[in-house]
Length: 504
Image (cartoon, rainbow, N blue to C red; front, side, top):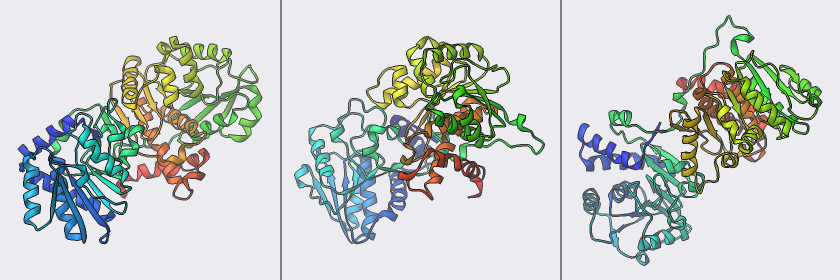
């Protein structure tokens, strides 16, 4: 699914109106009807509803929606905030239609005229995605009153005050904090940044049937991965373990064997034919017993990584989980990068930290390799960012400059590709914020890369599988109780769900 800038959304609306054809107000009515259908499961007939409409088209959406809600709910107040006595054409038409239907409309110009209680359900239609600057003083007072009311808030299209892309100069105290956001057609880029989670709440994307040609022809570098985008490779009947790739995992120092075990098990559970784990000699018995399916290659050093095996036989290499950052490890990693020019790598954890401390290594990373930092590791690599919009742009730039794929981990993990595109991942849950889940991700992606999935596909599919396994795990385990091993146990179910996506 494409993620458009707010300026592009306006162009797509205009194309739909011109080519469907449909009148502008007709499109507003259609959007409001789709919105009502999405909100309906959350409405309670006995609850008092407060609909807040601004003077633009987002306000018009709210007024049309109010007509539908008023036919269902017994108690409703509708406020139209008209500060300049100037409504958009469609908002003015929505106002006339609502009044002609017999509903009372409160037209106000001051926040003191707004009466709210914690028991209300507020429908926020003050500002839409066309907002291009932080709210001014008078609107800030409305937002403060809404946020301080304690009421449940549903926002139409985007929480009022939130900008669609870059909020670095916005004022966080003056953005509506919605419990739910019902956005039209495509999500907004700002929805995927952690600092905006408190405003967006739960997200529902509503198809309002904008023109398919406009949607398909409008270019964007931003995407939200959907299960329909993913395909699992067919495994031929007459196959052998060599058919499905040979992976090398370099991981674990003394005291960190668990990271190597988790990554190895995840790699094998994700379909890799042969896995060799290179570990310090002191971990030999632990790894051999814990992962009998893997080949174990021991380092000359008994406690940490210090030398490399022959890498020519491997189709992909993973390095980093529990590795440590000893001087010997830096030297060996530097040599590995020189040895592995034609072999794509998955670089994680301490391997990333070694690069951050020795930035000259960046230029030696094999093309199409995959880096999997969490935000702190990424900031060590690229410098601190004041917000996640800035961090995403740095991520895109680094992918383009170095011809690598970067997985920036977190809620809505972002995968940046050398072509400048970014793919946000929708799967996963907060139970996965626990030790070892990143090691599992490294193992999954390494496995897919070893099976000759292209790097972009391995990263996007791997992140989706990882999160989906976590989601499946929480069907029987509470999020608080989730551990990394639970993800490994559900990788197979995640594969199955993707394979059978067309048989819902």
